Image 1 (cartoon, one colour):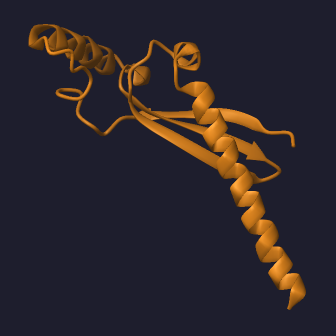
Image 2 (cartoon, rainbow, N blue to C red; image 1 turned 135 degrees about the horizontal axis):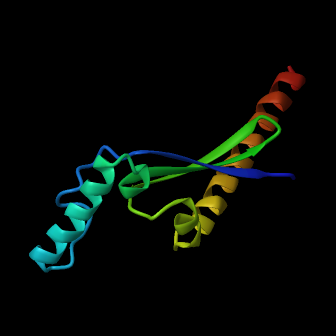
Length: 111
């Protein structure tokens, strides 16, 4: 099965403050949050994003979404700890969608 993957990156709705960093050091956490907010103010969607991986094949799609992401850019995200797992989940969802469609078509054909 020839599957292609793409990313959709959208602004995160969850507030940065209180959610971006929880190191136990309030001053450090505030510095991290301030840096993220500055990047957001400059239009950098990767500063605080909701990322969706979409697996596609012949019109079928599978998705996996992760919120509260803060990365330098797309390549940084892809090198990070989540991308490969998200591709696997999106592909599993794609395969499940194809299987459900096959089952529905078989039921229709059996009628």
